[in-house]
Image 1 (cartoon, rainbow, N blue to C red):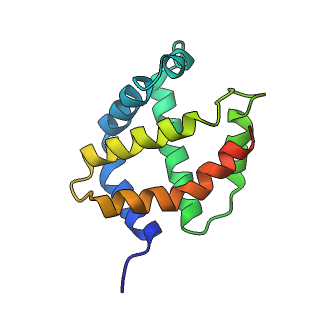
Image 2 (tube, helix red, strand yellow):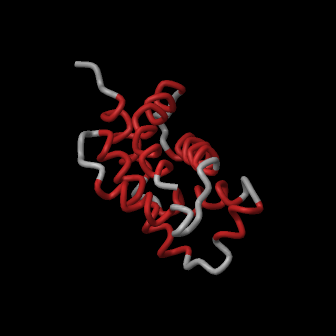
Length: 132
């Protein structure tokens, strides 16, 4: 039986998410992508932020595996212009930082895995972005 994108992503995330350095390196990469993004995190408790990221990525993965979008819609509200004001174009930088960090930490990562990640979590990211 062939793995679906959501299976590939679930397994890939499992290989990465138990290493706290994965989340540290993700944020280093993401904040390094833009001075505006870096400024968003100036007064942030990064330990707590990494915990939120761990959960947020899992929500994207679970949505790709068929879970309801309730938590993603709530993320969209909190990240909207009336919340944290996370501009829609920043999600591409976020995704690029995620893929680059997955390459670094998942020993089985390939171009096919990268494609599976992009396809699997794109609908969830769009739910979050669309709340802007």
